[in-house]
Length: 372
Ligand code: IPM
Ligand code: MN
Image (cartoon, rainbow, N blue to C red; front, side, top):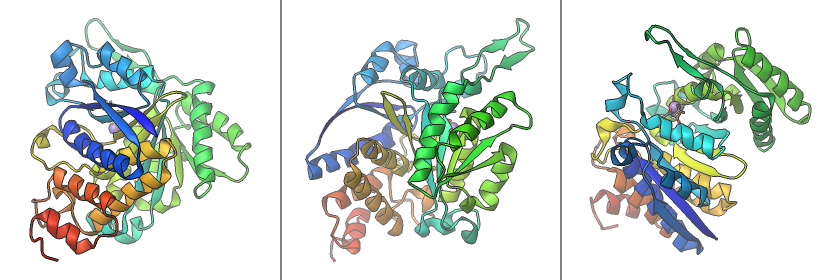
């Protein structure tokens, strides 16, 4: 297969982790005889520095003329600490999602057996957790009208949803549940919000088309609590934009590090793949950022194009790296010598030599010994 991939690595650690995902995709291309062409374009704070615009037209054009987008991270403290900034890096990502019509953001959350001890949550609570979060991505309070009064003393953000916006993401969630444990939990705040009541009505109606799937409802405050009390109860979580943003960061604690969580954002025509973590500016250039979320986002990209064996091999390589503790410091207290690129090297190497011995890999890549 030939795929043209736009690379928008963005700010902070974005470029470092995206590089590792590209390395891994290139290895897959070689092993499975695919041609992946990568073309880079600026987005976020670096794009503002270069052009004054967090999503320059040329970047958007590139995304519209490629098969998929591989996205890094966005954000810079100089904007976070300046509430009066008119142009913000995040606007680039939001405009990109809207312009490409990426209405569904899929965030898988899994407790890896080898990492159960890394989570601050108890092993018996998280072990076996396997959740797929379907977050609506182009509506709700993120995109509603925003106002600030002239005297700067009053502000508002409008939260709007249409039946159409709810339906299209809900269908994807139900279809996903049919191939999983056949349960959808709609997370909302229907005891307070009109938009949430519309979600309940529309999703309730759609459920009738999927008789093999059970539909549950949970208020978001309760869902936040259930996520750490008993995450195993969840299969597919369906929710609106803002709740999905919050719940998915919370859920990342189950995996032991936010550096492991990948995502796919899909629409009718385009698809974008990105780690759920931010730009982690404190770590920029230090080689300590975990590239696995980005690498697993690349695996989701392959799944999207039905390259299931290829995606499975990446996941197998990731599992192996976690099992051997070839991991960055967020998951590795013992040593800080496994850098971002070492993790990528290991995963790349595994793809080329999946049947090699574990010892060989770990020794070579940790630089401890080449004797096996
Ligand atoms: C995410 C991020 C974004 C969001 C930011 C960077 C705009 O937190 O992808 O979860 O809020 O959607
Ligand atoms: Mn977020």
